[in-house]
Amino acid sequence: MKILVIDDDDAVRKFISITLKRENYTVFEADNGKAALLVLQEHRDIAIVITDLIMPEKEGIATIMEVKQQYPAVKIMAISGGGNVSSENYLVLADALGANATLRKPFSGQELLMSLKFMQ
Image (cartoon, rainbow, N blue to C red):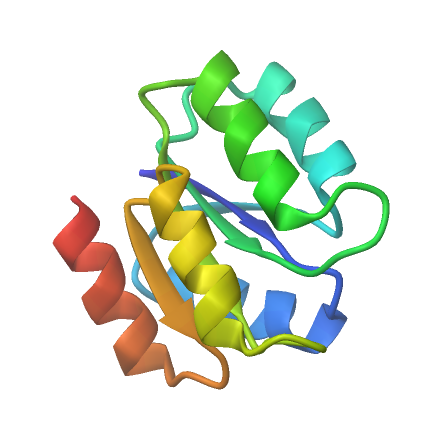
């Protein structure tokens, strides 16, 4: 299964990617929503997008809306550590916009994999 990980924090993106690769997922990475949409255009067989919500260029909420519109079969997991507003508020909004799962940062590799299994 192919998964696209979108996060502007290199450490978080690498942590997620390594965790998924250890479970034999094929992983693509992007550091913002704009770059992620280009990856989705090139790899139309991506099944799941894991996206941070607060990012430069194109943030996660706009990315979720665009992915849902252009690639309705792709499942989405929204992740957030918050910002000026609590992460729960962002995650509730992501859920309302069609995210299939949400996960609050920080999370463990085990929590990530468990959330992912519930999406499949």
